[in-house]
Image (cartoon, helix red, strand yellow):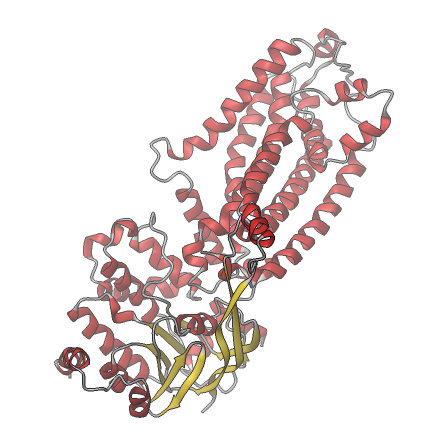
Length: 261
Length: 319
């Protein structure tokens, strides 16, 4: 098997307060305050992913998950280090692809498919499947700005899963969908995983990670806190602690997954 | 090898599903650069179509604004310069003015909409990997699309005069004028689309600059008036002629305006603004045109270089 994703000591520096006016900068300087304020969103992150692996990327809010995905997707460039991928990458970053609110669902599908590298013929062929999966019915020819958040997530997910890709990125895809759609997504992602696509899956739901993934990477303030076995990774995050909230959440996810199989 | 990297040709390698040993590990970022954009023509077509629709979305008049806007400016200039200030000074003044406006509009709209293009598409730029040069380039193509009907109107107006005698010069000067304006308009749009992400102030600066530009080129007044005023200060005249857009405007007038002026029209023209049938253009019109095309190519390469240096920071700065 070939290496699918190679993350080679990637660090990403972010600046806070980019958009200060000249006056604010001058005042800050005169008062001797800090003018630049930076933090490392990713700090020396390094790992390799084999083709066909299913990675569950976990971590608390703000630990750098989406930033890492943006690097794998090729949207951002690291401050140092490098990311390499093999084959076509498709997926979603932060629930929903980049949509144009004034354009209809149909136009956005064609646009997104083209950005992800599909030709017109390919998109034409897959359009019925995408439309059916998104279940938008007559909203398909309405501007996306009129959609509910769940509807646009459905549209985005539908395009992303129908791209013939070698690496699939799913960033909290299930956060806004309703139960039936979540079930459908999980099923589709399993299909994708089973067909040999490398899966990169971000989720806070331990049960779905357990079900979907073969390996867990935990990010902590931009560093890799854990990389390895799924159960150990979930334990590392204390997501398997027996407090009531987690149990309730796990049960609901388990129920929704269970009903599918 | 390189062919397999560009997304739209990757289908073949996917057909042998995930047998990827022969596919190299590459940087996932889209292959940028003007070349990268031109390789993804299908995406570019979709972008341009979207831009065409999006520019006037939600407005009742829609696309008509693309014509109402330049037309109202044309009327203003015509009234002030053609009627109040210089009645009878320039034969077929309307054509003199409009021939210049076609290229000046193309330049200013490419520059203005190019500068705003990345900011306007930030929802896509933040989440999808694509060569970001595509936005200023499609902004230029949209402006070019709107120029075509203007060119048709211009030719129609020339024909109405009844004395339009296009020559070889018309055929050569028109593409030269467009080449200058397209190269520079694309370059400016490209460069400032990236700079504008860093400092939004540039939207305003560019607006001021493109608002001033029409007055710095000889279309509301003839070139001969400038030559006359600065007769004793040739440096100023040289400086005036350093503006590449001036050359483009003069080439357009060489192509469409002077070719409509018959000897009778010339006889009736006033002498105050220095009109002469065989002396309405500065010397070396053609050489200047060629030089500015060269300058345009170099400038476009420079703009691409600036863009590349800023490109990696664009997603970090789009808040």
